[in-house]
Length: 321
Image (cartoon, rainbow, N blue to C red):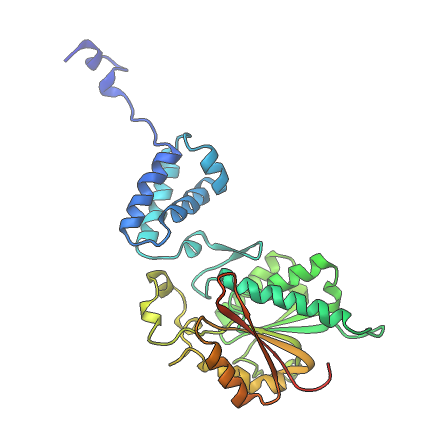
């Protein structure tokens, strides 16, 4: 052994250099790919950024920066959770939706980007309802009802956007869900974004509310209900198994819950109002058949998402506009 090997500070006592951001990401990306992740690099970046408290752009800009032991251990613990299939959104405790950071956990479905189409339509239709005809002074605010609110993604996003556009005082919102746990999460998100004062929360089975105070029909009803066919749910990516099954399972053809809501729309949507309901790819004709059977005289339009798939059904009751 050479003298340099035996003296303090020699090669034998050298501490291995901490791995760089880039090196750590490369290694973890490979391990997550082998574990079956559908987006291993993105998962790795989101989890490391979460541990370090920085965004993905910073990670890329500082790819040669070392990652210390404590941060590395915390990151590896999160990676182990992801490798079992747990969604990144649940691990981080948040999900970006319509430009907002929403708290998410196992109490409710993780908001999907496709649902942003519904929010865009809702805000657009509210603008139309507010400006299509002169509203007398003292008119009541328009009522928006988010049925099956889950994490509150839709109602919170609509409330924030209405505030941004300057007509928050012209709109009030109602958010309902059959799950008390989900409703609690929605309330937390509303409080976090400063819109809890314009949203009423209630436990409900779709639009059936016990308290007469909640019986008022909505000018705009929005709903993202479970629409995955029952036999498809077990084939979804493993991450979906961490989400509440009742928020995914839509019955034999996926539209069992949606049909129940359609049957309730005549009493839940005000004259001249509109309903916006999210559907899945391949369900357009099933939805059209259901509307024909359950809502004669109602107008129906189907809107696609960014991928061109049918995504939102827009329904208007017969009568004056």
